[in-house]
Amino acid sequence: MSLQFAEGNSAIKAEMKADPGNLMAVYISNYADCMLLLFNGDEQDYDKLYYHLEQRARMMDKCRDGTPWYRLCKAGLYMQWAFIHIRMGENFKAAANFRKSYLLLKENKKRYPAFAYNDIFFGLEEAVVGTVPDDYRWIASVFGLKGDVKKGIAKINQFVATHTFTDPLYYDALIYQTYLKFYLVSQQEQVWQFVNSSSFPAKDNLLFSFIKTNIAINYRRADVASGTITQMRAMPGYRYIPAFEYEAGSALYYKLDAAAITQLQYFVKNYKGRLFVKDALYKIAQLYYLKGNMAAARQYLAMIPDAGNTQVDADKRAKRFAETGQWPVQALLKATILIDGGYYNEAQEMLLQSTEGSFATQPEKAEYNLRLGRVYDEKGMDDKALALYSRCIAIGKDAKEYFAARAALQSGFIYEKRGQAQQAIAAYTQCLSMPVQDYRNALRQQAKAGINRLGGSY
Image (cartoon, rainbow, N blue to C red; front, side, top):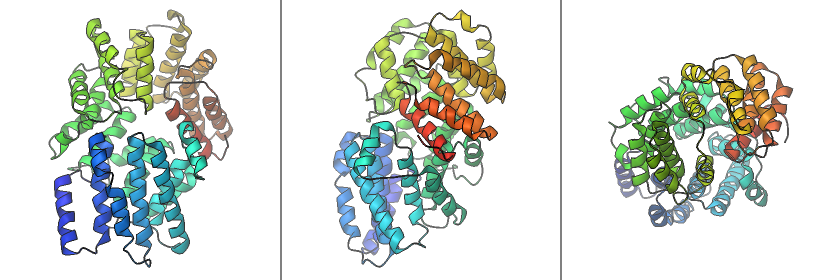
């Protein structure tokens, strides 16, 4: 889990040779496949490693059925490969393996209700199914999977609270808890404080440093993300994962630093997977556009349609941008990037040089109100933010652009923070009702999670 694959595999092989009956070594050997494929997404590696799943599952079956670890570890194998299948676009295989994992855990909980380790995987699966995106809801329905965000996260929280890093699978639980709390429980500040504390083992650990970088980018802390990436470059194994350069380039992009172009170009050239490739090209094109180099901007714009895929929302947005070929207003684009990087004062100064009336189209007017609202939101000026979000929604609620839906989601966050549950549920429900195309899955997942947290229904 430090992404030191050579050392990890060497230790596993030595243990298997010394004690062929140690099935925990078989289980842990699956982590290398999981990490490698999730980060690099190489279809050739996927084809070579795919047979490991059933091979390891059969080895697990050699265990006498008298220990709770048997079903737990077998469920862990299927869950990890479900994540890999999703990564590779094999959604039906992912659902089938997810169901196998889910049923094994249900049986294990029935047989061994006091076995706390059940709650690590079962809690994660329960939370994930509780907010499954619309595109995948039919799969959950076909396989009879039901979830609950609050119950799922409560299980993982309980495990983490009653165990320490000396216990097996503790760091697995810690990673799941970190992401679930950040994305599904709206506890971003709490998570941010945690990943910057001594309790989060990011030092000299590539995986945890990546998580800190990823959280920093998504919590609008571009400076911290850049600093963490710089530290990661000195760690063994960094160069084997080109996806790290996507994070490095994104951190610089949110600082409006043209050096991001080189990092993102490296990612596009060396990455063997298909996720975030369109988005990387989109960011490169935007930076060239902001520099006034339209020839290079159009060159990278033209590369987007044939690159990567549209499995994630960022790539879907890049594809739609390439199809329209409509370059955004530079002031709005710069403000958006600065806000996403955490540079609120600079963004505010830029936005206040204009008014809503300065913009010609309905989407531009909606975006202006959203961006200025986000600035006030991040600066704790809730009433001003809500007024601007309301104006954005009024302008863009029937449009395919994501501005009004994001304004509704952010309004929900503010109302929830204030303890105004009904207003928050109404805002989240409004977000779900909009015909948004860009970032649709992410927006709807967060809105559903919000409704679930507050005991509502959708």
